[in-house]
Each structure stands twice: as structure tokens, then as C-alpha cells.
Length: 217
Image (cartoon, rainbow, N blue to C red; front, side, top):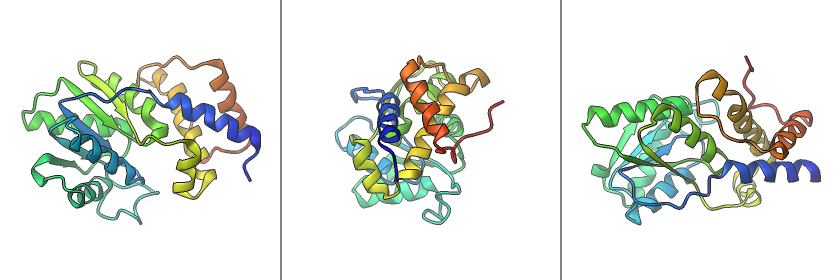
């Protein structure tokens, strides 16, 4: 059972993680691999709205996706996009990345190998990882104009779709921890984090929503 305070804190983190960027035409759309096929759906929707002419899906497998996506996250995303009518010629697959940093580095390398000019990127992620994706790409690909996007959904709607409120809150806390510690490790740009968000994060940690934390060094 999720307490009223924990839910309120989770909503605060959820709102902070969203960049509230307005999608605009970019050189390429990059769908970041995860357990959530909704990322592929959003990427396809943006492609069909003319936001970019080319899609890169990036992602291998993880402990949360190896059973559901045995061929790899990027490949399952590609299959979903083909089902939704995207031509195969408009999709590139990067199948090796196992974290957000590798998503960005390997997708960038793939595009450079193909000789594709990329002044701007529309990053598509899970809703609670928009800011993490933006901060990571800003660090690893600083010359590119970055726009973040995700499914337009509330925390409550997302929990209903995943059907496991605890794991969603665990993932929210994990995403927030990375925003706090990764800039110091050189993995992403530093984001201004309001004190209220830090306090909410700390309360959620104290309540045990910690399965997605990484060791702090």
C-alpha cells in the first residue's frame, strides 16, 4: 500500500522529471530502449506528425526486459514501429546500449558512421526519465539541439498501465538519484533541483523505495 505522503512525493518527482518541451521538427528521433513499448508508440506518432524523417531505436536487454523483449529492446521497438506503418527504410537499430549514456553514445556513433548530419535530436523516453535523458545527451552530445518527449500521461495513468505502483515509484526514485549524483561523476549535466524535490526523494528513500538505486561513490 502506497501512503498518501509517498504518492504526493512521487507526483512531485514525476512533474520534475518532465522537461515540458514542445516537440518541434528535428533531424532525427531517438527512442531510448526500456521495458515500455509506449516509447516506440510515441516515437512513431512523432514521426507520423513529421517531426523527424529518421528514427533510431537504441537498447539491448536488461533484467526487466530480457523475458519480455528477448530480441532486444531496440529490435522490439522496430517491430512495433513496422506494425504501426513506419517504413523499414526510416528506422535504424542500435542493439548494444545497456544504459542511457550508451544509448546516446552508440546512437550518435551509428549516425556518424552513416554520414548523417544531426543538428537536432528529439529524444523519446519514459515519462519519468525525460530530464535524465536530456541531461545525459546534453553532456555527451553538447553541439546538438536536444528536445525531450514522452507519452503525455499522469503518474496515476502510468501506474495503471504498468500495474505495479511500487516498481514505478522505485524507478522514479532511481531516476532522481542519478540526477543528483551523476553530474559529479561526469555522466550528465547538472540540473537545478528544487529543495522540495530533494526532500521528496529523501522521504521516498526512507520509506524503502530503493530497489533502483545505484551505489553512490
